[in-house]
Image (tube, rainbow, N blue to C red; front, side, top):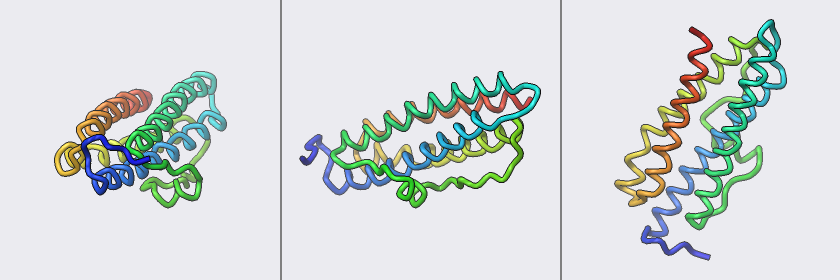
Length: 157
């Protein structure tokens, strides 16, 4: 059923496609954070194992929220690994060691990349696409990623 919420069908489709790319980024980052949780080694194993668990749990919620935002706009969320890999601007290949600093640097780079992408597109939602709700949602998502990136960065100081 078509969403009749004061935004043109064309704009809804463009927002949904943009959100699908964000969803793919979030899912790839979630998967990489899970990998860090499962495979981290070193003298600080337990603390980093728990830290990565906190991060992937937060990302799991984000993945669900972005998908539900797409559905609120009357579109279907991508939901396959193939789709996510086609839509994401992140890479799943890290080829690093299984130590905490390697994982933290990799994950931090991905959070910062997502932040830049969100920041570059936020005004377009409210402006050209007439979707203040998505603009507001993306602002909150950006703030969440800023906090998560800060937490990762703090481990490298």
